[in-house]
Length: 289
Image (cartoon, rainbow, N blue to C red; front, side, top):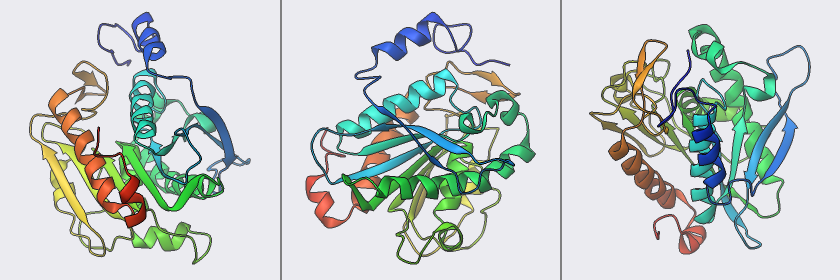
């Protein structure tokens, strides 16, 4: 099954390609690669991503973007490209990470298999920590202020990566800092319900009409250790921030809810601004435009 973008019959259409080309500075990024510590394959895997750097010398805070089960399908990548440009314009180095494409996994096939998606949460959590370590090798990145943001399966990864148990498991040394904050869009929270402790502040955005994953399960989370909150948009389905007309995919309702998309983005920036170290807060453009 293929998703339909606004004004299109399929994702890979003239409209999608034109919209992609019209994004401000859409191609003004570097392609980067680094080793996956948990390849999930019999051979080594190089993780690849698109890196966006603000103008100037830094040092800048940074954010890692984690796609959903469809991988870098055009509508997903278009939306993540828009987030990346927005973050860059607000003074963040942004790494848009392609976990599935790096392993040559098909997005539609991944979306149809709960077993594969559960496995992905594990190795993609390692990917998130690998990406954080890569960013900290860049002399213009403030290693104390590295954030995560993920959608759907990527949101589940972000939720897991924020846990203190994950920080202890996936870090390479006691000196490696935890993520400064994490934002999860419509994640599956079934495996996180109950207690636990957070190493990183965590905010979750869910849709009240989401029949793929349960907003209630996210609301049933009661972790300790760092700031935690769940925002539910009652009328929003799954993938409410993607540039998709509302439709059925794999039997589930998906597609954009304009109010939820705009509100969650504003709230995400406000949340991240609060989590920045005081010196970075003084220079932050997260809430200024």
